[in-house]
Image (cartoon, rainbow, N blue to C red; front, side, top):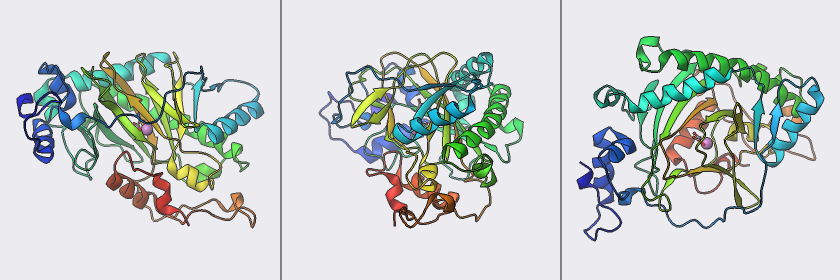
Length: 360
Ligand code: OGA
Ligand code: NI
């Protein structure tokens, strides 16, 4: 199959749409290409040369200790990080290191399992609650990313366990349950960081929905031409991200890319578009990406708090307590479902900030 895809050194005519389809039809994703022994990435994966430099300065993403008895200073650190960087890391968050290690192993097992079993999960059905594919925006993006992704909507209504992949279902359920509990803690802290009462975001149902995504970034033969995950903001309220020790996650800060170094025991938290919008731009949904790497596979377990699968007509807009005559609402209201639908249709790299869609 890999032979139907052209590589940068080939001069044959290039029918991009046909090559995307040929790749999609394999149902084995990027890992399938690597397993087939390709030595060069196919042309569909070539990204335009980067224009934004990577910072040469050492830069630390704050690591916040959730077990600190000084709650006021924890809230303050979260406020500063969420306003300036849109990202922070947390330690002593209550999820045992063993569970973190095992969920990453579970993600790796999913991607490395028997191809015939894995293919059964391959889908682009927007209504699927469990599945896997390579590049949800394969047909709309300018360049495909060097990544395969497993997904499952775990809350508020988890799929029956037997619909989850056998090779990782137990740990995935366990990890998702723990992240749901952590969500309660985080949304209280973030509510306080916004100067709201602790339950404010929870009363708005921000902690009620969870999507689990297990990414696999196989080793890439031409990392300088490819991207693991192209630059994007996350769509939802907040993201709880667990990466392995390989690294490659970078965030955009003052027009430079900054590494988010793998930190043992830490989870990476970032603010999503919906929370930036609700905070009337006080908190930032910051662009980030994953560079491709010769080392691999890199795996990550990413949990998105979003209620897009809840049948809710609830409208979200800038929170009344956070707007005033001096700071009028900057966005129109939306349902979570509509905003996530819009985001999926735009693809991962929306060009401009995706929130401009809601700008008043
Ligand atoms: C994402 C994302 C980064 C990673 O899934 O939105 O940014 O490290 N993932 O996998
Ligand atoms: Ni992201």
